[in-house]
Length: 281
Image (tube, rainbow, N blue to C red; front, top):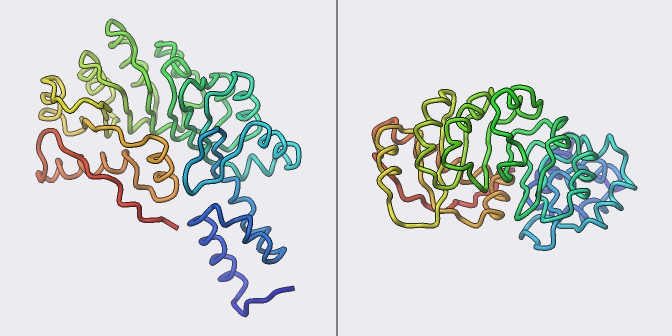
């Protein structure tokens, strides 16, 4: 047995910090000693990226690899270990398999055309969700009250918007999500006032647009409500990774702008800097 000479608790913390800072190093750390394997192997599965396009710095696997993982690991292990999942444009049934096994997911990023079936989301303790509108909404406020996965949800980013005529119903539905503090959407001026008025508990409304043109509606709401933030998207998948590893994602940057507005340091629309990329371990 290999001994480092450090107290066991300190040695454990050192290895866990190293694993969290560099997830790709975990397969190497596992080989150091049996006790190290017990400490860091669960961290290998904390963030799963299940798609064809890898994200720099995070282990990536395809559906066949995930099936092998699910066959070799106990349901309790995966439920306890997996906290963050990015899923590519897989078949509907694949998503159900993943979500039925990884029962502890707190951040779920459904990229591209991936569809998150509401029934599969029900038992997850989701806090952050990135998906299409109809993955989670029927635009019924009563429906929002009855869905269990809304209970813990604090951050929601939708890739598409409701129709203009549904803006009021959409705002009413958002208002029924009890802990929703951060919401991001594509441009839909008809909905801004509805959402800000209905969602009094909302701390930030982020409008993500690739257009550099400042529209009158965006300019108006940025001046009358400090919670309104317009932002240019920055490499969505990389931003999600930075949020997981460092806490420095577009949500954090929007929070900083709102805080500066409250202090009177910033007025109106704001041009956001990129992430600082400092690893949080």
